[in-house]
Image 1: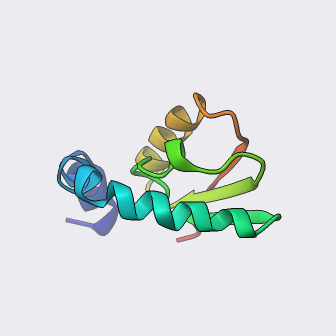
Image 2: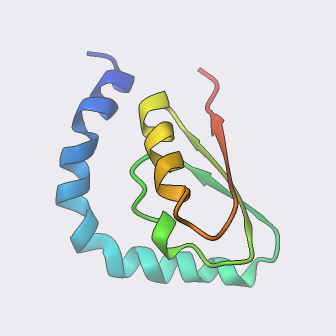
Length: 91
């Protein structure tokens, strides 16, 4: 099984296990972005867990290894007030 396939298959399970226990730390970490008034790279955005917590007013460029996860992140971001550019990672 390739890593891309593994990420695609295991992503929903990962989200169920990781989302709740890491939410507080994820929010604290993301709030540190407010110190930067520039563009931010979100590498590996596919699980969408950070999108609802992104500070407004920054420009984000996001990448992910799998097209499925990147598409999912794009759908999550449509509800966001900020602009997030999506780029497929080079292989």
